[in-house]
Amino acid sequence: MKTSTKPQVSIITPAFNSAHCIENALKYALAQTYAHWDMIVVNDGSTDNTAEIVQSYADKHPNIKLHTLPRNRGVFYARNFGVTLASEFVVFLDADDELTPTAIEEAVKAQQEHDVDIVQSSYAVFVDKMNARVMVKYMNEQMGSAPLSGSKVIQAYSQVQGISFTMWAKLYKRSILEFAIKKLNIISANKLNYAEDLLLFAAMFTKDVKAIATNNIAYVFHMNDQSLSGGAKTEEQVFEKQYGFNYTKHLAKPYISQIFQTTGIKFDTYSASENWFKMLDVPKFQNIRKQIQVLQVWMGVGMHNHGSEHIQKLKQLWDENVFSKCILINGLWTSNDGSEKIDPNEVLYSNCVEIWNGKTSEEIYNENLDLKQTFELINLIWSSKENGVDVTKQTNELHGGWYNNYIKITSEL
Image: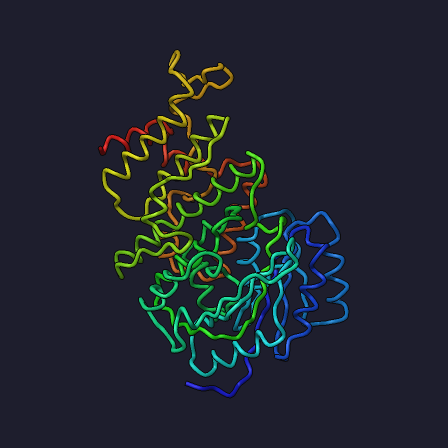
C-alpha cells in the first residue's frame, strides 16, 4: 500500500576510537537527499577525541545527536542502544563506511510503496589497501524485485553469502528491530563483536518478516585493518575472532533451530552449514586452554543433526589438537612441557550471560517486557559486570566442565 507521508529515519552509528573516520560518516549523513533524518552516534567508550568531533557537528546540526557510553560495550550493544532512541525507521552506518547520497531517499520510496519491514539495498565493497572498489552486489538479482514475506524472506537471506548478510545496507522498521532486541534481552548484555548480525537476524526471523530488494547502491563497505570483520594476525587475535564468532553462533542456535523447525530452512548465512561442519579449518593454538575453548564452541554450535561422521571428525580434532599435547597426571590434564595444568571440571565454555535469575532469554521474552524494561534489565546486568559481580556463574553451571562436554558429545558415536 503506497503512503504519502514522509517518515523520519534514524541513522545509527556505533563509534569506538573512530576519530580518524567519524567526520566522514557525519558528512555522508549531511549529504543525504532525503530531508527527514536524524543521526544517533553512540560513542562506545572511546578514549580518543571521537566525542569531541561528533559534538562539534551536533552543535551546528540539531538532527545529529551524541550519546556516550561510560565504558566500551561492543558494537552489538551500541547498535541496540541506538535503536531505543530511534525514530520510526532505522539505517545503520558504521563509522568507517559510506552512505551514498540517495541511500535513504530510495529506500524510503521502496518501503512506502510496498509497506515492508526491511528494504535491502545494493552495496559496494572498497578495499582501502588497494584504493579500489572491488565488488558491487545488486541485491534484487539474488532476492528478486518483488516483495517477499515469511519463509521466502528467510530462504532468500539463506542464499545470500558472506558480507551481504549484515546490519548495514538496509532500511528497517524500528518495530522489527525492537522485536528482535526484546527477544534476545539478556543476550544483549554481552560484549559481542563477531557475527552479531547473524544473532539479531536469527531472532528477528522467528517472526514473519516482509522485505524487498532494490538495485540502488546505498552503502560502501570499507575493508581495512581496523574493521572488526578484517583479518586477524596474531594468535591472540585469531583466538578472539574464532571464539567470539562461534560463541555468537552458539547464542543464535535456539533461534536458528526454531526457524528450522517451522520452515525446514537451515538458516546460517555466514557459511553453508553442511560445509562448515566438515571442520577442515580449525585454527591451531600453542595454548591448550585456548584450543579447548575454541573446540568447545565449534562443538556446541551444531545447528542441525550431522550424524556419526560429524562426531567422528570432532573426536579426531580433539585427539590431534588437545590430547596429543597433554597427559592426565594426578587428575589434571598436563601439557607435555608441564607449562599448563587444566582441571577436567573447569568451565571453559562460557564468558557470556545466558541465564539471569534462573531464566533464559526466551522465558524473559514471554514475560512481555517492553523495550524500556528490556534495556533496564540489560543495563542492570552490565552494571553488575562492571562492578565485578560474577554474572556468568549460573550460565557456567549450566554448561559444566569441558571434559564432560567432550565425553557427552563423542560418546554418541
